[in-house]
Image (cartoon, rainbow, N blue to C red; front, side, top):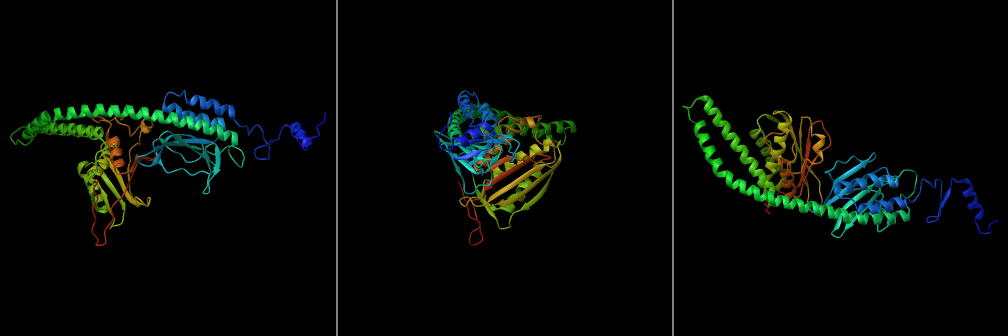
Length: 428
């Protein structure tokens, strides 16, 4: 029986063709109904799976691998929000399009054309890409951000209203799961650090007495002109081994204590850079430090020099070991503009000419006790270095470029040269 409703012939024609459909939400004809399906069932199944994921790695895979497949999205990146540094850190990144992001890399707030807010898709004014930002808001506030790439096919908007609502529901569950996993990880880490601090304190107290005695006798033997050369050489080796034990104990204590206040002092940045380079050259004479300092001669900063020296020294020592005991270390420095509240940042880049960081430890490089093929190390050098840099409000990251290992340190410079030309002071 024929229908007398307006538009019925056109609707019948569309059904007969089987190739076109009508979007009632936007009043637009679509050329491919199957390609623009709502994926509602898939999104709801993923939302149920979010609550069953047992660990953080599984949640990251679900959001950056399974979700893009469900939505037919080119790529996805899961970012964690670091409240201390007020920046995003990459947790997981999957896909073939967009900027390549390494896990652990610190990135700026992403830029995308659309923002999903409470189920509604909002087009941003400064849009440059076709992706969608999905904030992950939990009980404690923002815990992360999901960045979805462009959806395949030509569409004015990447999500229908129903899809936006389902995706928001999934994001809310993912935010709670992410918060729980992060809280659990922080709780375990704090318990480990408490146990490590207690153990390190006991070891440091018990080691210092015997080590002082051993070192004293070894120095006496090494300085004895009447002793045979072989004995003096072995005594010198004993002092070196004792010094290594003391450094390892101090490194463990530094990491376990954490959160210590900075002893900032204000000085010319060029003097600081020359001091850092000279310190590496003196402590690691088999390294050749190649300097590339592009910092104004009158620039001044307030930094904890001792901690910064440790940071550079730890990275340089790893570079020496990676290059087989000797080689060239490139140390570059420049001032980069930062937020108005922080001013400029001192950016240091340290690069060696070794084989680079092994793929199996890249993702965990800054975690404590992570080491590979290094004898006599604790695996705490880079963990301590990152903590010291973060104490300054800065970032330490491994750059993806090669051929050797390349590290980038960025720290805000909080002091400026005064009207009289003298550097001020800044102490925390």
